[in-house]
Length: 143
Image 1 (cartoon, rainbow, N blue to C red):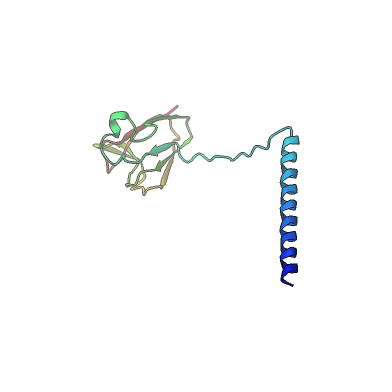
Image 2 (cartoon, one colour):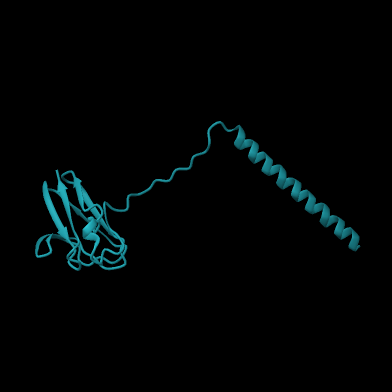
């Protein structure tokens, strides 16, 4: 009885192996006969227009103009700018200059990975800064 069970097990294993090989060969032939390769595309959603990169909470990013990336962005009237905090520290996007803020917009403190958006209805130059890190400054040019 033990010999019959081993023989049936061996035959079953061989049949499964042959079926697997046949299926694999069929897939390979199907791919070779296909004149156009299958291209999988994924729509990439733009995360933000301006990024506050990692380590901008430390002085030094102003030397390479990399506290907000890009530090100056040009848009058309009526468009929206979205900022994303990609640092591990809190930041803000506040209109004006560090020593002379204005009341046009203020994100408040943005947690890491948090975003803030402003729609610019009027043409002009809009300076902004981070209330927590005075070396961080940027500009929106609205045409």
